[in-house]
Image 1 (tube, helix red, strand yellow):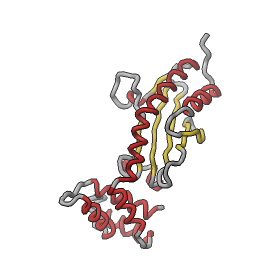
Image 2 (cartoon, helix red, strand yellow):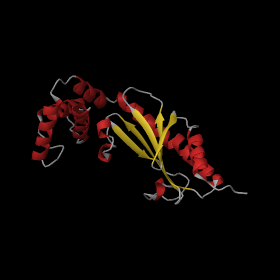
Image 3 (tube, helix red, strand yellow):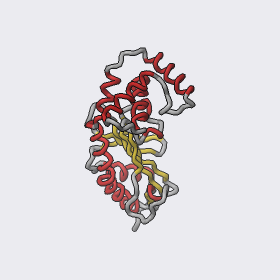
Image 4 (tube, helix red, strand yellow):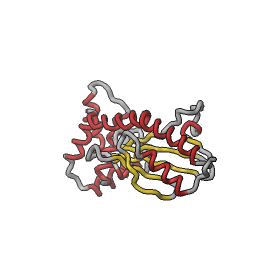
Length: 219
């Protein structure tokens, strides 16, 4: 006989299954259909979390992993492919579709048996695809550009409010184009990043400089 789900069993099954993960995520809190899990600290720099959003009536679950260094940018999705903040929407490897958003949706029926099966699949994807994401996130601390940019902002001794005001004035003058921003501090950091790869001037250096300077100005 199949046992129907209720909110209590839903919570227990989700938390119990994720507690078996290999990455050190532990349950943190629940709020507004979202279960929050936090990774046991591996670095003083990074804040790693996992969000499991449940649509109970629709039978859908979505999982997102974050690795955040710049907390002042944690709600800005456009920087989640940078060096400081990274995001992964966990993809369901148990379905054929690779089309977004179908590929990030985990479905379950209104029974404990169905949810247990779904959570087992999520746990598998977390321990494989999620593991790759976490390992890549940890490796960024050894990246030469990460080290250079972090050293740069750690050695800055400027009035953060004045720098922030001037930076955004320069940004407005450049029509909010990050590469065209003429702010002297920003340009200096870009120049030092460019020096790492002599003769190459990748556009990504402008975004890296923006990420780190934003961190300095806002944290």
